Image (cartoon, rainbow, N blue to C red; front, top):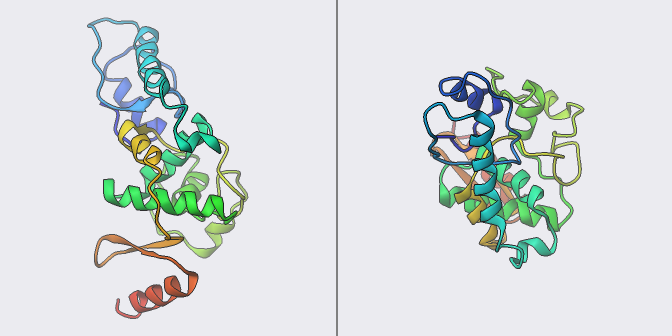
Length: 205
């Protein structure tokens, strides 16, 4: 079982339990899911099964509204950001809408997970909270500094999250932050509303 949001390091630890010889699997090549393989099966044969599973998923999706403006790799990039930020399907659906709204409005995504990816070279093991200076790191994956999407996914993406993106769920939300007390994200439609909710949260801690 490959868990959504896993890093390559996470997957390599799992693969080492099953295969003597294996190579890194690119985030864009496969879906996070549960797979079966035959005893003593060659890793490359196993990998081709995983790639075929993803290929079959996208086979009949080309008419989806999403693909009018974005391609398959961009879906995987968006999906990976959602995996690292979202808590459950409902939360991921709302975060997906924020990402799409920001992209449509030419706003920077400003997603903390992309900063963590940049700072830790993809391992997400910072072992401390992000600070303001972290948001300035010079990296093509730092969505506080770049316009649009990072060049590649930052984690493995599940088919369920791909389904969410292709739902093209619409909201007016443009901002969100994580409320530690409530253990959930708080969404806002305007920056003024976002600042007010953030101020209230910080002053009740």
